[in-house]
Length: 155
Image 1 (cartoon, one colour):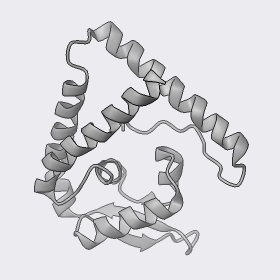
Image 2: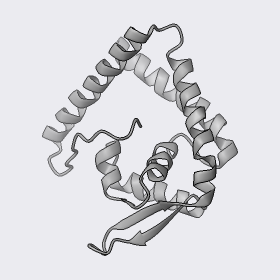
Image 3: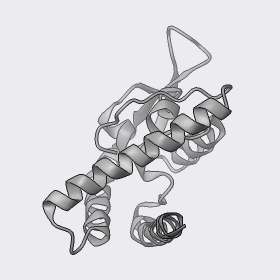
Image 4: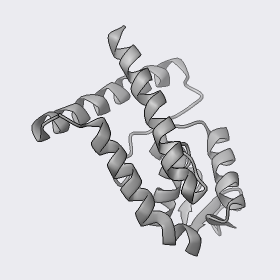
């Protein structure tokens, strides 16, 4: 159970660290991935975030609502399907997105301190495989939730 313990420790404390660093921008560790993706892909469909980030639709709705309330994004109905929304970054989001990326890069550097480049590459490959393993297992057990393996733009 060492893997579970250290995944939990890393997860808990990197989120605390990011929350402190991202507070300056009015966002937190559960919102930055969505904001960066929307900045990178203006007009992205809200529903596609579920496939990209492997999160429950209710979490996406809450996060999008919070980012919209904070003035970080706007929503507009999808012309092809009025039940779905297109998401666009605001000027505010675009103005802070590069600084948010830097905070995230610095956090990754801290997490990977003392690890060589080859080991970092291997670690990422192994972590991705572990993520795929557990999502495939959940897919089998929870057929009502379909998760697809789509790679996001580095997030």
